[in-house]
Length: 232
Image (cartoon, rainbow, N blue to C red; front, side, top):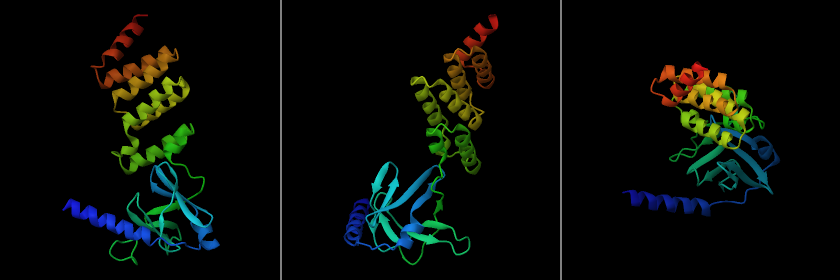
């Protein structure tokens, strides 16, 4: 059954690619559809045109060329989705809508067009805009507290990557962000304490190690540091 589905999927894809047309995009279409669309709360699709050809930037691919079907509709093999530029009749907001597989006249309003200078939380994080990054991640958590976009260990890894580069101040900001997002975890306090310790700030290291112990009394490294600090 899986083999049959794969076969028909490949055939369908080849047919679509064979149907790709050389579209003459009007200037109005280019002007109204170019820009940034929010794919997930922490991911965007950038739409642009070069030599009257539609391109996308998505997930590290800076020149993703979709299969053009008409002036507003295209197919993206990487997503295995047919998308259409649409405008909501009430809000007048623009979207990339997913076209129904069964009826191409039907579509949904999926990926909202945002400002060209819009940045996701991860974009802010990469630019060292820590307050903006945290605000964005807090909003994501409010919508879904289990979202993989705010994974504690991923954020922690980013902090330790900065520590290895000896970007201590930036690492501390990332660990602080993790504390704000995961205040119930002893690990985030332990990591923040570790970062402070590497900068020579033993008082803040002590404060955060002590907090880690209050959450998990089995944290041996934290207990050892707190004991030694309190003896001084």
